[in-house]
Amino acid sequence: MNDFDFDWDTIRVFLAVAENESLSRAAETLALSQPTVGRHIARLEDRLGVQLFDRRQTGYVLTEGGMRLVKVARSMARGAADFQRAVDFEKAGSVEQVCRITLGEWGQHFLSHHVPVLVDGLGNVRIELYADDTFWDLSRNSADIAVGNQAPTQSHLIAQKLGERGFYVYASSDYLKKHADAYDPTSWSTQIWAGYCGARAKLRSSQLLAGILDGSPCRYAVNNSRALLDILRTGEAMGILPDWIGEHEDLRRLNQEPLALGNSWMSFHERLRLHPDLAKVKDRVAALYRQRYAETSQSLKASREQE
Image 1 (tube, helix red, strand yellow):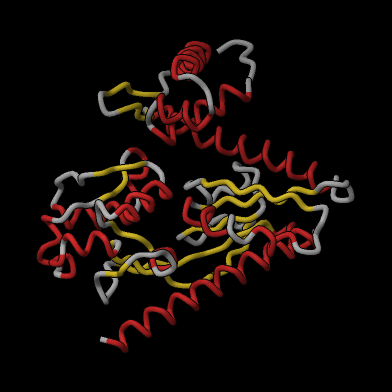
Image 2 (image 1 turned 180 degrees about the vertical axis):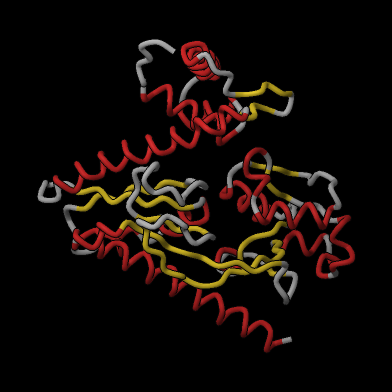
């Protein structure tokens, strides 16, 4: 490798392909065309003199050399993003301040209904919500706050547990009118289901549904959580939702005990404490989630008492 120019755009493409194991999914993430992504990877491998990926029918898989280099690339990404966020904090007295929150699609669906609470009295704060499933590397995502289902391991991040979530089966009243046996778990393998496809097929609810269907495909599959909710509302299928979403939609829960449990966490940069307005946003996000989880627990308890 001679006189290699570390083009940051190319490194970003390398990381996106490594994480998605697919040119098309990386292209979607980066808002680029698939051929452009392919050219970046080919040019990077040529200039480095190293094969970064094995091209397989199932996707792009890092070689041993690629695995070693992706660790360095991630460190570069953290450094670049930390620099940008440091610049943002230097501008703390500017007219507009940005608070970037990275969270899953359900989190974005939830918080988007509560944006007035987040900014009340903070007229100079702008909120950016990123529905990003790779929420734990806050530095790389240039975000200030993350909400997800795992506690971060990075030493520079502070974590707070928000509560416990459960996964249940939900359907609309219209579906239940046509499929009265849906309350019986022994019928679930023959019911009509909606679930996820694409990269979201790796989510916990997808794994639970795959177990119910014993590997058979569901009738409807989407790669967007809001679309999944919309299908359930049509009455054409049933699906698996986290309780803190399903209990607050016009749907019926079909099981009393959860299929699985998980925890919800919020993490943030230590430096956020130095910024009073953004720290207030962080506290409000935590309060909204905890209130929602408490309301969900009350709903579940009331339902069980009625049985």
